[in-house]
Image (cartoon, rainbow, N blue to C red; front, side, top):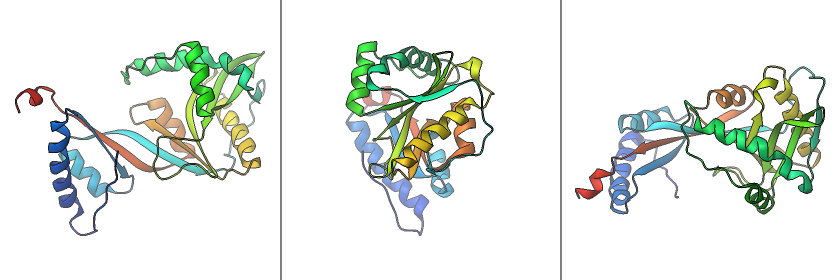
Length: 232
């Protein structure tokens, strides 16, 4: 982990030189996955890293803690779970991780055990806002203090670190209503900004979050052929 910056003149060339030097060091340590976070508006640098074999992977987005415009969705109860109720999220946690493993994701994430899920949620200080229908949880938003972002954290900022809705409840405006419920609770508590990060190859997340959040950073990644290490 580190930081990157350059003067405004000839920035693509400067970044090219910096990556060439950094890449040499990273390969010597055996690191064959390289990731760099760039501001979303910086198209010059995105093109430079595209030329160097990088592809888009992750987006960071943010919005003020204000309600979104949506129609009311009847037939659901929106609540925040108590810590003693966190284990009720576990079936949706498993469904979310199965979703990650499917095309076009192919993300080999191993889900936690139910006990591990409860422990990590407590350690992280996570909060779960859920939608219920007939007493059964059908969608959740996980809110945490930390997030996978370097420009917004702590204080009056909170981060969406998990989100899932059962497919049979899509297209009803349910998740917009759940998001508004979450925002209304956090705003009353004094929080002013809400962030989220998601993979660019997640069509469901990309289609939803980009409607309501503003992207400010893109992460680009490159995978090096591991056999090059054996030849050096």
